[in-house]
Length: 343
Figure (cartoon, one colour):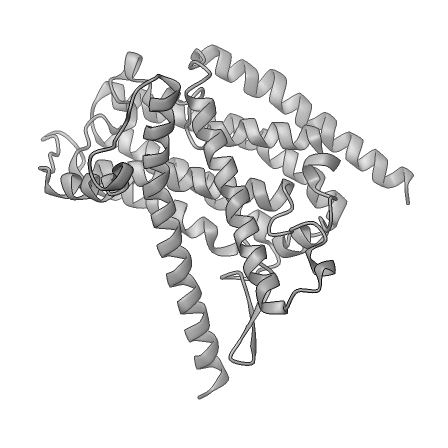
């Protein structure tokens, strides 16, 4: 079998596995949110369908598939249908460059646990994150509904504001590591040299910006139901609404994976290589370590949503421009000065 065909098969299998795991994680992130929010509010949450309600995500999907798809007469029908597809495509494509392990040896072949090993991984993710706003903005505009339009405009302003702080907070890590390759950034966090310890200001800025980028409470202004009915997806139903729901939780999982990669050591289990375990089991433990860190961050996203009330829109913008951006710039200057002085 030619080498190019073997590489194609390996890449296709990695894509299939990652997408199946990602979609399953998204489905059960919804379940986890409903159960955790019920616990916080002293309710039961879904517990009827399957043991402890574990089959609830499957039932929700069936329900949404069977619902009627309603499109307003005055809507731009093509863009109205295209918008949720853009949001989902961007959310699922972002995971392509995130390393979920180091390497694994199967069938006497060394396989890198990353779908696409590109040398501009950080830039790729930031570029895709900036494209995600198009789905929300176009959905708000195409619906021909004033509440949806306001939600789309809010999303645009919010993401532009916080993308700037997010990008600058990542620059500190790029300066310190001298690369845009995510697997190199993870490798440089060997032991306890995690960037959350070395770059605490950068981590804080990136974390807050991630909440804004994923439209999660307390930054869910584009869909604030008390003000905008449902915001940008007010006029969506059936599977189109489900796609927006899928995109939101996929973005939460991807943001958690990105935070894990940049700041929490990625797949690094401190000093695992010193334990003398077989290489295969080292690879498995690294993947499980990565999944555990991502799970912790997803739970943190959920916990914050049900703990902190939504900001007003002026508070959101003031925080982005007057607090987050200056902190990110200060972190960048401190990092650059430290690198110059320690040369």
